Image (tube, rainbow, N blue to C red; front, side):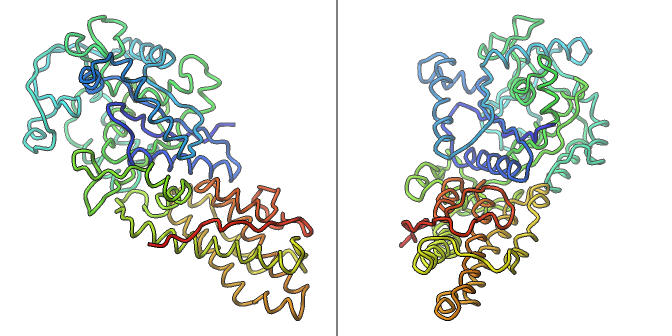
Length: 492
């Protein structure tokens, strides 16, 4: 059975990871965990892009070899993913032999197909983007340091697949989301499409994968990096493994690398006669005061600092619930504290403490019995269609639905007042508290992709042993426990 295959971009190692990297990776991790919860087996790939001019320059600046530089940078990403509780299936580095070998196989294959040719090119080259740019792009002033270069290089016949790619996007065979990004790509494709320069002479750039049919050149970074999505599942080496994964169900990317993923990558796959990914989703940027977080502006918020102070699960919850996928979102400490106190400390944390305390005090620390397994709460739970939200990448609205369910449990408690009812009808109060506790159990499981550790704490407090999303799994008589508040309120 095919796995649900999710990828992040592979991150460039010229600098340490920041909140942009963290957001995409948490998003992929959360989607992967949700897919597993609804009964699908997911495969989640992330990794590092370690070749190119910027890596070579960063290494020279630090007076080390590019290989040493990459080996020094990689742990920063791996350690952050551990701290963020990222449960990836595979982590690929483009300097690994398994990747290099497949890139060279693909270069030979595309060359034999007649889709690679050599030509001399003269034009403007962007140092930061590591690509040739048009006169119009130079005039825009958005590309920093540029210089005129004339040299021989190898080119991929990207233009050959232009009209076919347009048809695949318009038909939905390749789904580009949100719709605004699909329109952006189609607008780009309805202009003249240049062929793609896929090499650099070793005289200018040594740090790259050698072109197998010309030892004087290395592969241009995009024709190397994008291939990670099929080199990890062993394209051309293990057909059974590859067919279990490909096509990817979704490539999660930032909107700044939309064209490379929606134009370069699909045309490369067409040349290889491979299916296109099912979806490419370009999310927005995290802003502070309406400005993109960037090193040059000095406004990058270090996610490690947030984690150390407020806990990894609360940071994950904020990032997943606050950004509408596809749009930009603005970070502020005020909005973080407000979201934490409202959703986590008040709505969820207080409810857990309240239910567990009432059961502990009135039912000898044991889960009470119920009159029937059905209630208003079980009906509300059954109405949550997780798969529909996931299929449309509506992470924020899914979390909103789950938290509305939690709020409905608070409403159920206020309406039935089991703390009063227990004095008059203990059996009826037990029924109310059982359904409130069972609601918390399923809510914790539904929230576990976003908050894996805190969800475990809730399940332990409830004495829950079942982790399936079937209503009624709590067993009367099972021991519950009261502990410290799961989400202590933040006082400013």
